[in-house]
Image (cartoon, rainbow over all chains, first blue to last red; front, top):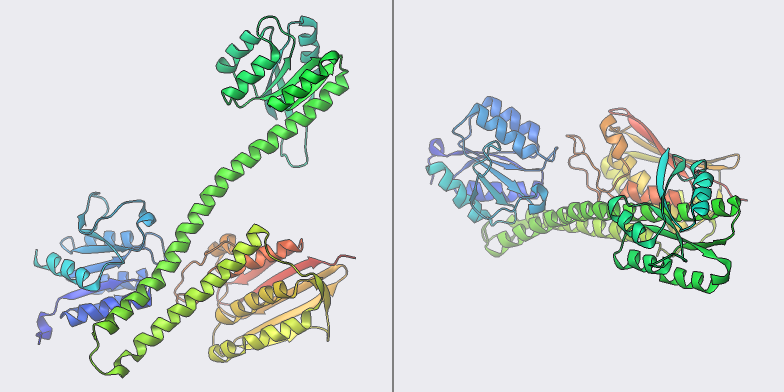
Length: 133
Length: 374
């Protein structure tokens, strides 16, 4: 039983309500305290009021680059905050992502890019690896 | 004014200067073009010179005499075709070589003008070849643009289909691994959500089929006298359950009967889409009214609501496929994103127009105007 005080905080933003449901479920099962939003604005407001231990942002929400915008704001406010960006289709960004590819572009402020077809368990293990760094 | 480059290849200087005189003052305009077209004329006296010019300063059109010293006109034509040069060819032929002229057109010359020709005959031939050139280029341009648009469409489409598939797969996995425990009730919400996504995918695929049928022109149209009031009432009934759920009141306003020549299925689609939008993009207690009327030689269909309205930046893309700009209020509204683009295409079938007036937060009014023929 995880001590609630030690639960790492995850900020999760994705506009697909079912994806949000499933990832939240997996994260909570693994002892994370989840703050989830189905829009960019909600996640931004959260960042202003609290500091998460890790953030997971869907790339396309209200805007096609919502994820990038959120990552930028998050890193500006909390430079050490690990950020994961999720993308549904490789063609979205015109870049080929492999699982676990680390950030090749310094101006895009994310630590990891992952594809959404990924198993929740695999996502969780990436999240855990980012927090223990 | 757009200038086309015309190369005149003839060994007789009189012919060359004659053509130059006729064409340099000539301009052509077509209804489908924004600008008039003029001609910049230059000359060559042999086939070999012409070929050199094709590479140094390629013309759009070449007026080619078939009787040339050295390399003949037909050889030059063959050169153009073999090297796939983007040059339209008009053969200038002496009357006795009609057979040769026909042969040339088989090889790929667009047309021929027999000598001696009057200025009017030359201008007339130039008209034809110019129009042909323009239509050919427009088609090539549209094909390239068409391919780009199709690619974008397919990319967005695959995204729209992948999302529900991923969601359903995720839920099935949760079920398979009993991630919510052994009690079946714990999975009720998961099952409902999955079924919802299935419904969404089905609606998307059905709309896609409609769209493809319309686009490809393969839609079977059954034009017959149709009572639009009856279709409107059926549409309102179909939307009944949704309107009750959304707490929006639907009403139909119009004469007892309104007969119009058209395909009943198409009008069902138009009315269903417009009325369902009026109900979906609304608030509890709101209304959606569908009005049908004729005004002189026009049929008017209006669907008005006092719902969420449409923001200014959405207006230009409203009738485009998948153009749903996600806003806070509309985030949870289900839909394929194809409804309005389908409606617009159907309205186009009838040579009609569709317009919208809207204010964010106040509501929207969609107006379809179709000409009454006969």
